Image 1 (cartoon, rainbow, N blue to C red):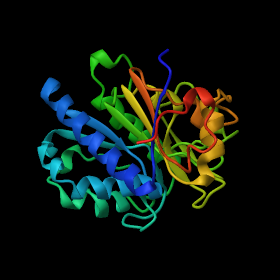
Image 2 (image 1 turned 135 degrees about the vertical axis):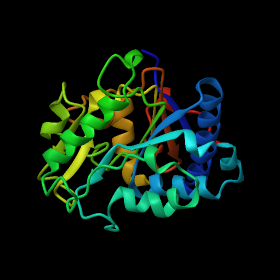
Image 3 (image 1 turned 120 degrees about the vertical axis):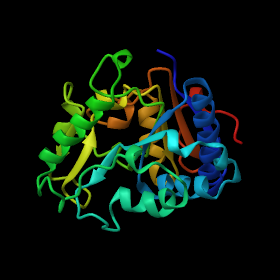
Image 4 (image 1 turned 180 degrees about the horizontal axis):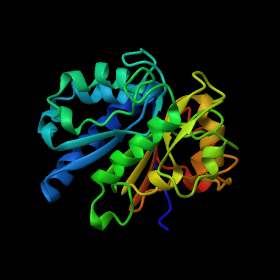
Length: 259
């Protein structure tokens, strides 16, 4: 397996702008090669900052937004339009500002939606959606996402897969309902590690000194049950995109020149 790449930017603002620029290039190149692209969005402070930077970037006009499929890595199981939902934040930061095709924007269900107030039902519904969008060459019931964006928590969670939780042990399902989450809200819906690892490229974006220990442990090879961030890899490429504070405790072999 190809070792993960690490890129360090001096500040969180520069990190968000650089990831947005990288995303434009990757999506445009993918569309030129295959006519379409698929991206898994993430929430969190730096994740939403990336989307704001993307919306503001003049180069984002090079993307054919009508040919981008957008998914979510996880969602807080809250009513539609709730300000804490990743979908709500992503729409405000990016999707309401670009000509995305509504039929290619694939949010996870809300707790007050027609599926009812059960995150397990919402998870099964999203798994069915992923299976419908998978192609024969994907070899599984999930698309091979071109880019899967992820944040990382201070304790090492990714999406809504937390250390030692039932979700981290999942090997067969692509999407799971999460209950008793240690961070509010307690109920969520999340892609599983196998679904994340189906992506062509996984980009883990982290900013701030509070993330430094988790970043270091993940890159040092800590087990994924203890630290789920250690278990995320892309089929073709894995990138850790960091600001200087989040990179402060990197193992020596992963300390790249700062940009």
